[in-house]
Length: 103
Image 1: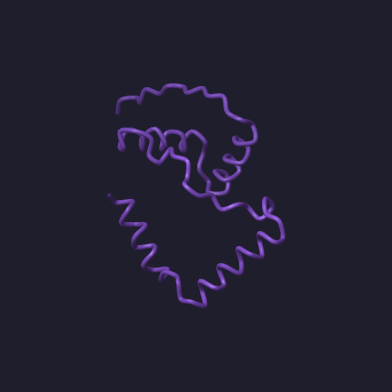
Image 2: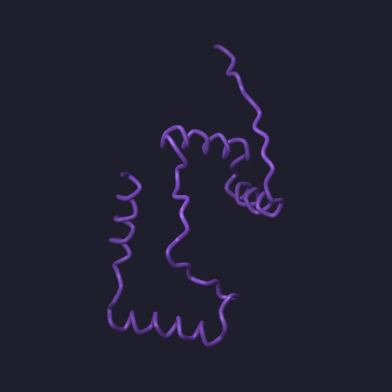
C-alpha cells in the first residue's frame, strides 16, 4: 500500500473561536485535523465554500441584547402566533430543510 502524502495547513484565528470550536470537536470526538480535512473535502465537492457567506436579512437578538420590554414583546408575538395557529408542522419544516440540503 502506497503511503499517503500529507501537507500542513497553518492558519491564525481568534483564540476564543479556536477554544470554542475545539471544545465542541472534543465533545463529539472529532480531532481538529479531521474537521479541517472534512471542510477541505466539502470545498472540493461543492466547488466552493459549503455554506452561505451572506449576512442574514434579519437577525434575532440574543436574550442578553434585549431589554425586558423587547423580550416580553417578542414572547407576546410568539404566543399570539401560536394561538392563531400561525406556525408550521415540525416534520414538514425538517423535510423542507433536508430537501434544500440535497439540491
